Length: 80
Image (cartoon, rainbow, N blue to C red; front, side, top):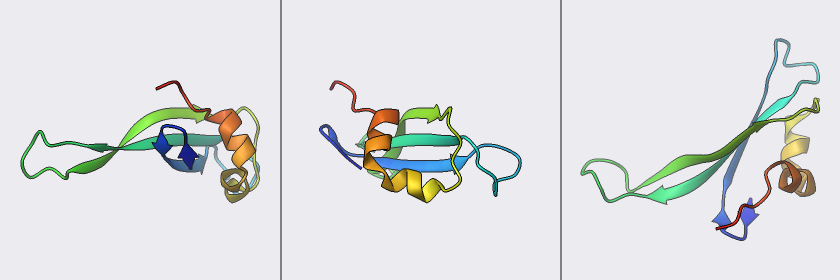
């Protein structure tokens, strides 16, 4: 997803017992960070920036991920 601060990776997974039913969804937003600190460690790694669990239940996680307006409401851009 494109934010004013740059691109972010968004993951989503249902939270609950029966994943075929409508369930709340855990959304996690990651930012790509560069590190030159340790030899042998990859230069770029994904760092979790924010995580939430929705109050609303969803049948289809893909529909939630493709709805940009809802994602922007649930995971708004933060001030730099």
